[in-house]
Image 1 (cartoon, rainbow, N blue to C red):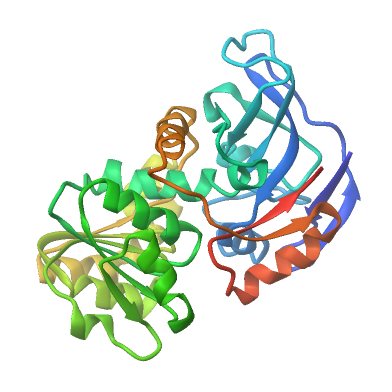
Image 2 (cartoon, rainbow, N blue to C red):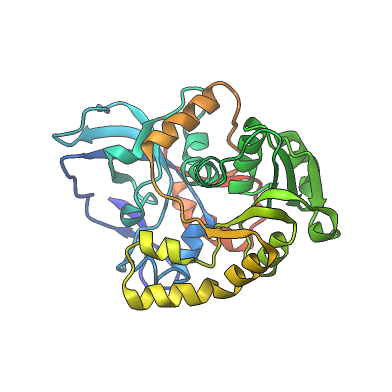
Length: 331
């Protein structure tokens, strides 16, 4: 089958013929019809996560899929051939930039009926990230104040909508061209990150969802109220992540060192910092589906590329500037 492959870290994506996916008894074989592009895909290609995600090369990237079930394993009960589904495959089994992929039944959900295949393909990773940050980790409640960085991006555009659904007052950062767009998504306070300093304008926040890291994360700690929390999805990873990922003792020490500075700053300010590396979950996708079907959440697809232009689409990840998500479509 046709797929797009990373053969060496920092090398280009290349079209290639690859073997058909290997199926287990609890796997579902999916004909890929749409695959979202994520910043994570570019970070994997660049080798940024190879210490904590030691993929073997060559590797088919791709962390989002929407498509149709072709066949199911012997122990699969929830899906049948012909079902339209979507998923974020388990982190050890990515590879949606291909014609077909085998996905564990537990990671899969029926596609929302009210949206297109391309819209469904844009959602799993970013929607699960927003859910796990705001619902699981942040436990956002009505009346709380939440700051979501990069509100016009893939994660941000879904997180704004979800935070509003949970009853929060939402602030976000965006470029001047996207200020009206993020207001339409539900943001109450909108900050032009090029001309305004959010640290000077915001204070007393319960939660910050940071997708940028570095100085932006440091400043985010300072807008939190005592007891507030910053959740970072760009890093640095923290010891809790290292434990959950089952990293060896040497890597655990390295991870602890990476986040020592930001955790120290957080303690001095009386706030918390947590790193979130989202996980696959069909159960959570089903809860997200309900919010899509009732109109609470709407996917944001900024651009669709045909399968034969996957390399061009992938290169666009480095440049950024796409509102919401870019998606690869395989008719």
